[in-house]
Length: 524
Image (cartoon, rainbow, N blue to C red; front, top):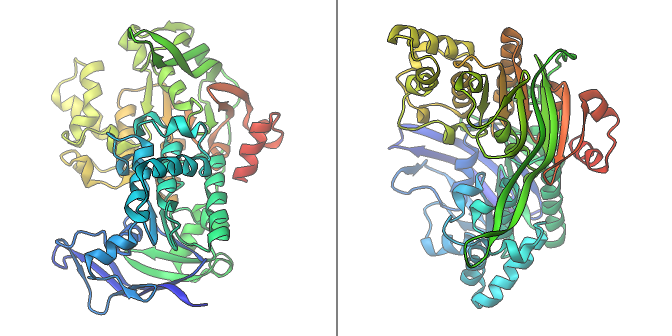
């Protein structure tokens, strides 16, 4: 089988050779083949992907002697910019990990897809816009014509990723590079996206480089896997070779990290938090006088209970309302209905002494941590509000204890968020919540963007903290493996409604609704 892409002895250095991001790697991709690249953050996966399209900053990057990237026989390293423009979005499509950072927030979705078609196919804007709607349909977005007029912020994370895929496949590329395209997606959408890519591969003969930290995912989709660590490919081979006869210690570590945690679940105690008939709606359409005439129901008549020391898992597709429900329970957005903390009725004006007992950890710590504040200021911010009587020494002791609890050293307090990895930033976010001494933590996809080894560490940390402080968790996640391992009870949401809830064993062994069955089947 002839090679579509040949990478030989690729070495990539930054800052005048002071930092080697990719160190002498070689691999090949044949036409129609799916090659998976696995590894943790910082292993060099994404840098490799960007180099294939010449997207690295030429002022900062230096290629090592003998480095070669050949696509269809043409050299890519240090080649002519006109050739690279022809490759980008034309012969090679690229799906980035974070669509919100890749999509223009000022332009409608349809226009952004159409622009790609106009540039490479030289068709009219009107025809390109029509084709953009068709591409949105192909990627499974409902109400495609209406969604084409939406801005990126009006779509859920899963919908934004589908838009990125539509843009990447618009010109029928020979090679599609997918950089963590399903990391933040729930299992059913993840399965749909994978099925879509496999179907496109079958119909068009398109080759795929699928970059992921999830080896189990690559096992489902890839023909061949390269395992990267510290800029090197430490092992590569067929899927059966990698999983049945792994040779490198790191590969074995990645495979073992995919095994779910085994946790003893708690049983009933007293209710610590309950929501009754929660409704959250957002304005969808206004008349010429500015009056709202149409709403979208993000959460529709949801009731649930959380018991002391319990973990309640909330699952559902992107746009199902699970995050909105968590924000309502935390009192961060307006809602209709009732929320009780230990039989004390809460509203948005409840006293902060009660409110501090319910804290939230957001999905993306990079966006939720203020980049202008150092770690001490970030963690201590809540102390100043809820414990105003503490002096500087007591405040510092409290911050250090919170950091120690989450496995971080005390000497990081003068550093800033950008100096830490994703897993470390998530630990800082957890410390910020813990320092207030809460009884309930609402965890919104706290591990979705983390590598499997780091994900396991954070989950083990959460279990330790839960047992140490008798915390109660509402754990929002699209990862059914994580929910099965952690949750005592499970609540499944769809289109803003609670379609099924019960003990975790009951939900996973005998799901009652078609939707719950589909979620579990997609995951397991």
